[in-house]
Each structure stands twice: as structure tokens, then as C-alpha cells.
Length: 132
Length: 113
Image (cartoon, rainbow over all chains, first blue to last red; front, side, top):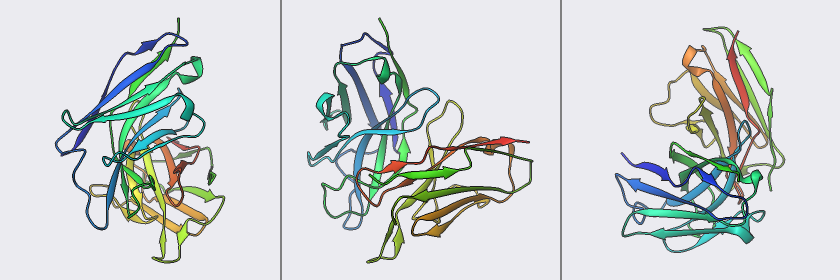
């Protein structure tokens, strides 16, 4: 059974960089796609008491997508040797306080740049608070 | 971006009764080539991540009880819980994946009456 687990600091100071890692166990980030299904790997966040916002997405081929509203501050990278993918969000403010989830996306796209699908597996989430 | 609007924001239902949640998209999420609606539903219990319930608007994810059903097409969709159980108290979200970026509705909170 594939599982995802977020890890990283729970407290970040304003103007600094938030760094989180998602470790995938029970399966590989770089396998599993077929002729009819592709998998993307996402970061999503949820401010306290609010809804869900996609931060960004990547495919193991190296293609990435970032939310335009966050694009200038976001980097998603992957370490296939460790079966992990990471999020860096720079210049954080209190507005970036949220529970951060990593998730797998199931897509029927044959175009590996499409970055769309439904989210079938989620990590438990980690609360990151931005405060001095 | 496609805007997803859910109604109501919250509803209180008695145990064993039916709960109905609506979701409307700002444009059709029906792809005419394959006749599929690119619409999913999730359940989020307090303190937990969202859990996939339904995809392709009406396909139940493996392990999801059959009291959960999805219906609708084009721009209007419904999630129905046929007989509410205590463990169904949660916030429910719809999500479109017709376009990038995928977008979520604002959520509907289901409580016990």
C-alpha cells in the first residue's frame, strides 16, 4: 500500500524559506504509469479553517507546474534515489500558515505537462506556522 | 480557472437520513470525446487529510461504502449520502480536473441533527 508522509519544521520565521519533504513508501515515484494513466505528485495546502489550494505538481520525467499565484516563490524538486519530493516556499508571511499536504494525482492525460487529475492518495499533512 | 461552487455551506442531518450536497462548475467539465465528467468528491474528517470518495462524477473509490453516490453531468453535480452514519460527519469537497489547475469547491460541512 503506497503511503505518503510529510516532514519538516513546524515553525518558520517571516521572510524565511519553508522547506518540506514528502517521503513515498510502498511504491516508487518514478514508476506506475501506464498507457492510460499517469501519476503526478503534488503539494497542496489548507489554511486553518479554510479550503484547499494547490501549490504545485511534478511528474518524475522532470516536468513541473506551479500555481501562478505562488510561482515566483515555489520550487518543487525530487530525489528518486530516496523516493522523496520536496517543497521550498520562499519569503513566507503569516498568510502562508497552513497545513501542507503531499498527494498523488491520477491522470488520464497522455501529455505529461497536463498536471491534472484526481487526488487518490494523501499524506496526513503537517502544520506550518509562520511567526517570529 | 474553473470556479467550483458548493451548496449548502453546511447541513445538519439525522442519523439514518439522507444528505445531499450540490456542486456547480463555472464551465462544463464534461469531455465530449470520452463522455466523462472530470469531477471528484472528497471527505475530510476533522484533523485528517481529504479522502477520495468519487471520481469521474459517479465512480466510487475502492473501499468507499455504497451509501455514497455521485451524480450529475456538465456543470451540475450531486453527492448523496443515502443513510447518514456518525462517521460521515465531515466536510465534503468537490474538485474539477477538466482543466489545469484542478480546483476545489469551498466545502460543505455535514453535521448531526
